[in-house]
Length: 466
Ligand SMILES: [Zn+2]
Image (cartoon, rainbow, N blue to C red; front, top):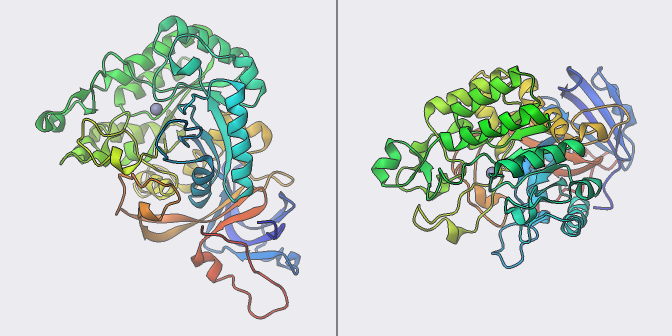
């Protein structure tokens, strides 16, 4: 990728920066990894296009700060586990899905609970980005080995670059441990991200407690398993005042608890994932293991409550919970199948289907939930991420909001193809992604209209679809 032009002109797109409220047709000049100029007179920066630079006509497209996903599973390190994903494959898929930054979860093998493992992840992340992937930041464990007992060295991990703490995959269940975790994350000024699941209420649970579960003879997973744990956390945190974040919310009971804590002034946020915003537990019918997810798909009322919570600003962050699993762990009976679905390369149009096509949000509002809001959650806004600023880092996503396509997980970069959205027809797509001023992803549809027309200047781009 060394031959990539370091100078790029984006001409004529609808530039949307939710952080500043900017929303206008404009040109952007990028050089040496930075945004040099934003001009609201489209075409006014075309003169900056010189031999060796790249001029991209992005008229009709949305030009936004690079998308940020604060919750993905990249499965590295994976000692003694099946090969499902690497930081390289995951970050490459992220870039092709329009994400310039992702935060990986620490339920790896070994668990990401110490500086040594964190440094290994950071080294792989640097390599992956140089090879055309997104940036990867690490969320690390709150307890050693994610066992829910002894806590990690919060200040050492925080100093070494951890952007948040979580035992995702499991909740921090013990009250005393949870209180200690909240006090510690407050001291180091990071966020704690909770996977809200009461372990006792979900023994053997595989899908939402519902008529479908009863008919299929599967053990139910009550929505209270999420909300009671969340309520417990919010009660503890009312005294402590840490930055608290509830991951992948699924139930309307949880929304009510979160709303109440926010009204009381607590710094508590919540996130939603594409599947919980679009599908109900009936999708598990026929023992569809691709629909098996943690927390489970819920009822239509829950889907509606999540969308309303987004409209009202109770849930402010969108996250994929990208969770690759090899085929043999899904090609089995429902009770034994793995929980999870991949999401990085299809999340954007799924969010659009759930939130824009239904009129819940407009594009600037939805993009805020995918840029500046997740950046603030993990403290990356202080480093200039999640916004478009002259002089700032050129992490940019170009979206064609009208492009229609069909989701084919076999075309994705993940070694795994476990998507519950296979075959879904969607609209909108990240047609180009710029990370640190380099074009790392560009769709044929966009590049086709930007072919050089015999002039002396070269528009040849180092686009790799590998
Ligand atoms: Zn989780």
